[in-house]
Length: 132
Image (cartoon, rainbow, N blue to C red; front, side, top):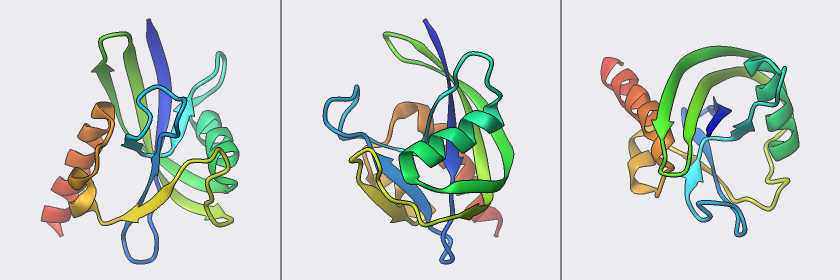
């Protein structure tokens, strides 16, 4: 089985990135991830990003750009992940699906139990931090 998903990098004014904790009852509950979700049939990645962030966080994405695409093999399925940077949005993120939210410095992300599929995004962030 292959699942297509989008993930968002949302920064605050201090350069921290938003991560959310998977709520009880979902697969991999308790693990942290970048906000996003499944891309529906016939939906573009950008449209899925806007829809998922509105559903999950209550924000309206007004500008975003694609960052990277990756494939992760979980035992039960393959995940095709499209990661995006949110450049502008309206609203303040809140956990509309009961999930915990946390603003985290990129350098501290590895201290969280992150989804394995999100680790290449963390590696990208670390490389970017070293370049600055």
